[in-house]
Length: 305
Image 1 (cartoon, helix red, strand yellow):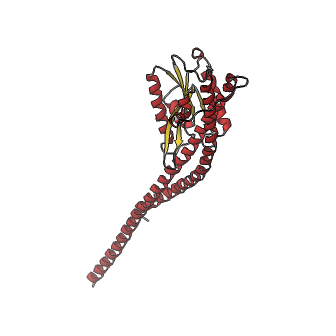
Image 2: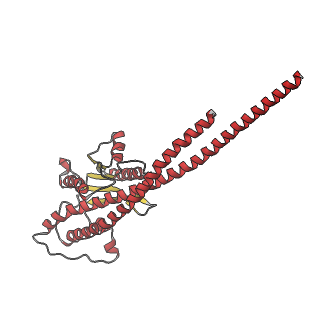
Image 3: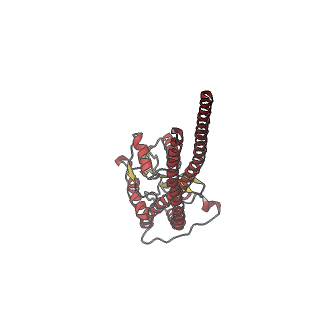
């Protein structure tokens, strides 16, 4: 076997092994998408109804709650960025990071200091490599989040909103995550979680459809109801964002791994064709050498006669 043919066969073997890995990762992601979609569908009604209830309480009472009251001159804003813990998911994390950068630029243009909180190792690594300050980070659960993970993220963020800016608190809380639209489409979005307003909570849907929010009687007080509901609202929204991100991550990884598998198959075909050509060239050379040797012997025998 010639040296060129050995090189081709070795590359075919390497690409074939890579193809097996990417195919396995594609199948794993495809199986996890279904569960992630179900979790998103199961969590969305609770988050939506809780948001409606909080919006109704906030607008139906004259309570000035710290989590629903706009600051007169907001100076600090917190941005929670949701990325992935693992790579090989195409542009999933990079698209979310770009959306967070755009939001940061807009908030700074409004004269606000921006404090970053990161979920996922990819986001932490991105900010760490560029030496950007991070006020808090969480890792290890982006592909399989549970409600306890959302609560562990929400609690310190709510404390920051309740704290005075002079003591290191923030006036606003924004979140950037990837929304799962379909198997082929995942779009990074940014939402303001706090202070809560009716438009932020419902996206303007209630007003566009002429929907009237229900009226409530409060016991013992509207402040007590908001104290209980608002933390649940933030937790449910963060949990829904984590589930949306997990579904988007699996879909992006499946698409990336399918593309890698298809590319590996094309590369194997190309290398196989080149290997066959190299083998044919070797055979042709061997035949030429045999014919040339036979001719030389025949000429030598004829000369001796």
